[in-house]
Image 1 (spheres, rainbow, N blue to C red):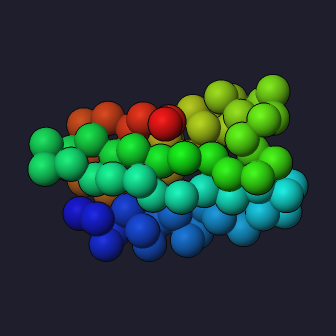
Image 2 (image 1 turned 30 degrees about the vertical axis):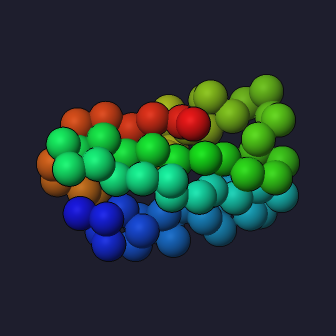
Length: 73
């Protein structure tokens, strides 16, 4: 599952980098929890929670079967 999550994050990354941000995979647990960290401009952006929910979480859940949760750390 971790490899598939990393592939999906590579697709998302250019969207975030276009606005000066980035994303880092922190952990994928055995029970299907994915933990990510928003970096650079995304880390302090007031729109970060919306970006996280509408882009990161949605894309991961749609493209990686077995994900139980996606958490921003």
